[in-house]
Length: 262
Ligand SMILES: [Zn+2]
Image (cartoon, rainbow, N blue to C red; front, side, top):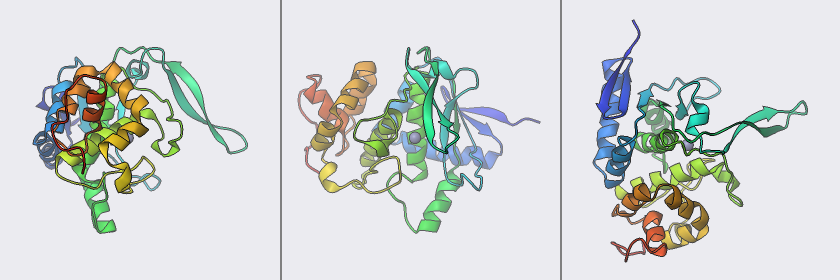
């Protein structure tokens, strides 16, 4: 018999491959909900007409430690921003991989699958002897749910960020930024640097005003597309909160709610 999907909250569902798996995922969803950042994300996910289904990530030899969010088959174009090019990696005969456009987004929004297993990340923590910034199972889930939320909204883009190759693309930047705010909301001071690993962000780069200066264009653009979500994120009382920096700079908020210095 095929495993059943069980509703966790609103649009958020978990595939019950086993009761243990569903409960384990629910435990991390509960943890995320204890934070302002998590509450905000869940609230906006639940305002969409589309659902999000969390199911186990299956490790392979080539891809042992990972998690993914992706649109349900057939709705990829709907997960992308209207008129945005969908880029697909293509390997040339000489071994070089390039990215070629394989379609154009509709901006309608899609339903989302999310491959995630908390055990993957707990094992990594055991193997490496610590929780590197961004590798806590709850943070990984939060990161993937940001990807998923933007697909639900039909806003995904493959754009690169000039001068920041290690971010890979704008969606990874947004997921890392929001997960860092979630992390800070939980009281952590070390932050994840980029998408090529889980290195700790340099202290000098982790002042929200400096971070915002560096990525002003990208963060302002997110405000332009999802002002209400970004403003609610700006109200999260985390020490590291570039959303707040942006809201103040854009004249949408009067003054920081907490001291600006870490
Ligand atoms: Zn990601």
